Structure formats: C-alpha cells, structure tokens
Length: 492
Ligand code: PHE
Image (cartoon, rainbow, N blue to C red; front, side, top):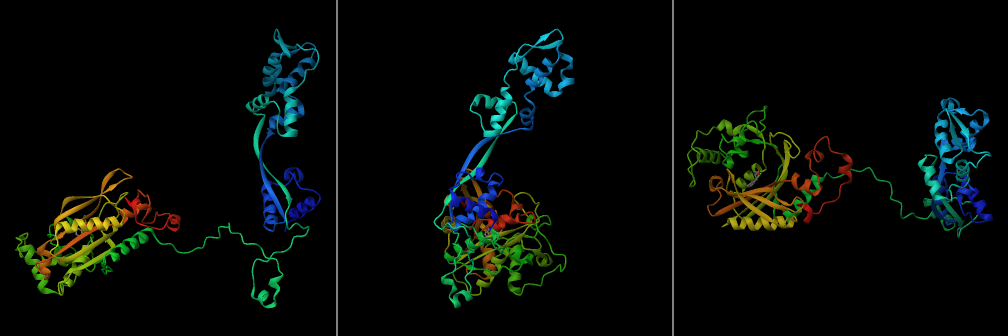
C-alpha cells in the first residue's frame, strides 16, 4: 500500500480531512482517488467527491503580479521623466506592454497628451486594481467582483479550471495499519484452516472484468443460424451444399435455362479453366430428356428449339445459385416422390461488378416445397407465413420471369425505416418440363424461393456498404462486438 494511503490515515487519525487539495496540495486528484478507492474498499475510510471551478493566472498575469499592470508601468515611466515620455518612445521603452498600458492609462485618466509627449495627470500613485485583483485570484482562486473577473478573462489574464477534491472521514474499519488482503482462496488455506481468520478482499461486483480473447461469430453466421431455425420449425430438411463447382447441366440446363441465355455469359458466370469439363451425368435417361425438352419440347412444352450442345452442358461453373443444389435434390426425390420441404443457405458466385451492395460472391437462402396439388395461392400463403417469422409483416408480389418457374414472383417487403417497398426475394412454381423430365409425377408441384443472406444482415446491423460486412476491409472489432440476432420487426 502506498505512502500516500498511510499519510492519509495518519491525518484522519487526528481529524477528518475536509479538502484533500488543502491537506495534500502536491498530490494530483487522480492519484488521491487511487488511494481513496483502495482504502474505501477495505471500509477504512469514506469519502465524498467535490468538484469546483477556480481561476488561474496566465503567464502574462503572473508578470503583472510581479511587475505591476501595463498601465502602472507606463505611468511610472512617464512620472520618472520630468519632461514626460515621447509617444514615439513608448514601444521602445516598454515594448508590447507599452501599447497595452497606454490605452488603459488614458481610460483611467492617469496620463494625458502634451504635444507629442505623454505626461502624468495624477499627482499621487493610484491604486493598481488590475494587479491587486490578480493577486487576490492567485491567492484564493476567485474574485468577488464577477464583472471584473469577466473582464480579466476577456483580457486573457485568467482561465477557469475544474478542481476535484475529496473530503474524507474515518470508515468503520479505520486503522493506522493497512492489512494485506487475500485475493485468492487456496487449497492450503482450506486445509490448514487459516481461511477462517484471513482477511479477504471484498468482491467488486461493479468491475467489468477483462475481456477474453475468444473467437466471434460473424454476423452472417448468426443470421444464417436464425434462418435455419425458422426453416427447421417449418418442417424443412437442410440440403448438402458443399459443392461450389458444378456443371452447366445442373446449374442451368436442368433448370430449363437455354444455352444462349445471357445468364450463362462469361460476364455473368465464372467458368472453370482446369478441368474444363464435368463428367457426364450418371442418369443418362434424364440427361437425354433435358436435351429433348430444350431442343424439341416435351411434357406439354414446345421447348426452345435450338441445337442443344452436350459440351456446353458439361462446362464447369462456380454455381450461380443454390437452385443447382435444389434441382439435384428434386431429381433424387423423383426416385421416390412424396411431399417434402428442403432448404439451403450457402455461397453462390456471379461475375458481377463489385459495388457498395454487390460482391462477386454472396449467400443465398433457398427453400423448395414439393407437394401434390399446390397452387400459386399456396406459395403466396407460405411466403406470408415464412416472412412473418422473420418479422416481415407486409409483403407484396410482382410478376417476374425465371426460365425455370412459371408463374414467377418477385417478393417485396415494406421497409419502415426507408419508407418504401424493397425487393427481398424471388420465387415461383417450377415448370412441369423441368419436374417431369426428372420423373416427378404430373400431379406434383414444387414451389421455390430464394433471397440473399447479406441483405437482411445488412439491414439488421444497419450497414449500407457490403464491404463492411464481407472481405478484407471488415473492421474486426465490429465482428467481435456486434449484438446477437433475433429476427424481428426491425429487420426491414
Ligand atoms: N434462383 C433464384 C435466384 O437466384 C431464386 C429462386 C429459387 C427463384 C427458386 C425461384 C425458385 O434469384
């Protein structure tokens, strides 16, 4: 324990300390506070904090206290000379102080002009109130005359400072000696029984504790987990999405996306250089049917009627949507068709220009529902239930186009913060020429919908630039400190 704490205890032994800055003028208030806190934690003292304003002199004012005010110094110079002080000599004799003193001395009526000279207009030495006031402030920290104080402040002779002092009294455990307090209860103490007598440092329940250097979940991970729970609660099964590279066949052809569709352009899709080609799909019959649907039409569709290329369908791509995964899962379902619900949340890639809201890779949240006799009304009803669970209560749907769904609907939500409708997703009923080619029965329909994971996450965390969420510019302390997620009203 510090010397200061001991000195404080000795002072208190005689009398309470009303003002620590008087009793210990050389001790800074922060240092004093440290000693007080440790003594108070042992209940050896109690203290109260007092904050008061006081005034200190500037360097110029200190000089005035020493040598007299500018106006007094001028008057002295003037009276020293029988013939007076030449106006042109004021600055020479008194420097900068001369000019300052001249004004004030005129105002006080101490000097007057006589031709080109200054002569005294008082016979005895007047009181130097400026210097006297400053002396008072130096001694007491303040001045009774508030107007004069304000004037001195204006003349930049005094400055206000805050002073923190403490009044201290004995506490219930007051003693002159400071006991060492134990901070740890050891097994030895328990075994030899010394714990019964040893003084322990009391718990500080206000201490915040040292932050532990632990890993943190990325906001995208947290929001994804919330979505997963919503899907599980609604009876969905998670699809395996651990394959970023897929063939054009599963990403496009099986989805009835024609081979000359702009989405398949280099500008929109990343193609793999090595290896260039995927293996042919195992289900040759299905492969042939997809070709037939595109080229000649089937299952009630007239097709696109172009020469379909097997090579094009075998080009390897970074999947552009998770619907590539859904398609594989539906193809699997066709072996034993029955009502089912699947979802996935994972990464997709698009060859897009990067800007504040777009990156070349992002996450898609996707759901598909297969059942007999589904209608568009069912899809809209489902969307309403799903988004209500996310906290999005007002939805609107707009007819849209996807090669693989008909009808297709864009999903808009009312954003109360932005005060407008914003697009949040895309959905539709998968086309019969896609589903029946897989072998799903005619009476079975499949709904699908997708949205990005980044968008609701950015809204949730109030981010306007996607680069604050993903990539090398992300502020790590944001990742470490951001709040837990509950999808609710404030999502949109
Ligand atoms: N694949 C669509 C997209 O990338 C989303 C979607 C999935 C639409 C399923 C309809 C059905 O936006």
